[in-house]
Amino acid sequence: MSEELLVPFLYDYMLRAMGISALVGAVAGLLSCYVVLKGWSLMGDALSHAVVPGVVLAWLGGIPFAIGAFASGMLAAAAMAGLRGRTPLREDVVIGVVFTSFFGAGLFLLSIFPSNVRLQTILFGNVLGIADGDILQMAIISVLVALTLAVKGRDLMLSLFDPVQLAAVGGSPAAMRLLLLTLLAATAVAGLQAVGAVLVIGMLVTPGATAYLLTDRFGRMAAIATTIGATTGLLGAYGSYFLDGSTGGVIVVSQAVFFLVVLISAPRHGVLATRRAARRALSA
Image 1 (cartoon, rainbow, N blue to C red):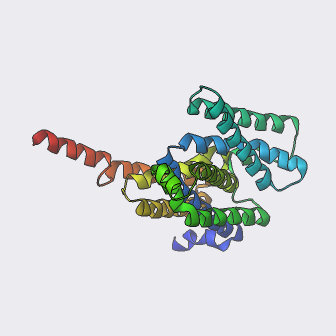
Image 2 (cartoon, helix red, strand yellow):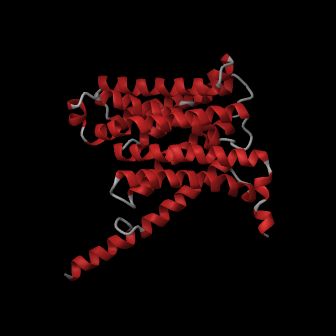
Image 3 (cartoon, rainbow, N blue to C red):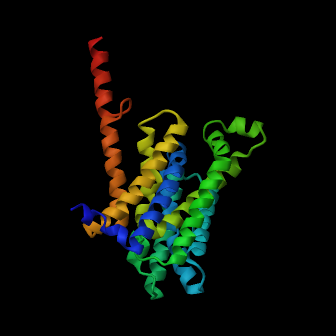
């Protein structure tokens, strides 16, 4: 029985899948802390869907998918920013209009330009079958995002909680907003082939939401979210071998299970702890 559990480690494609899933999961988990604190869950969803037309256009132009996907994501972000500043519409309405428009455009392009870009791969990912070149792209993007957060993480935090203080020390809240959008688009591109455009939002939100329930300190929150992202990425890819299911689906479901367990049992913010506190308040 123990030998059967080691079988996935005998295949190079499984080792690559587990490694890149853990790396992308860790970076997405770290970034998810900023997404959760900023309240940008819907923005992450929008950018993950907006990269679809860029993938198709990149194939048509013969350029790397990552370039087209990133350009499409940034164009969507610019469109959302432009509409938000020039219309009385609420931000969630603008985001909904833009991301559905981009996603619809991607599906339309796929329908009129038959290609080897499979819709299922774009939507749900295929980390088990990606080429070494694509793995290298995902790794480079993940490392660059992590390094950027290491260098600019403090300024990003100030932009979230005290933009006035950031401006006072010479920083730019607008530049930090653009930087966070750029990192979101880049991470969505990295996660596209791992879990797909539909599920990448889970990697960009769930680890941070889980960590938020466990601690009130950002440093610990970042460490917990990064660990959850890496662990679920690794275990999801590993478990998909035995379950014979979608790797991306297993990864995101694993993160959802972590979240549900923490939601119920977190020592301060969990459902059980909240009920105990309510009972003590009533009996006092």
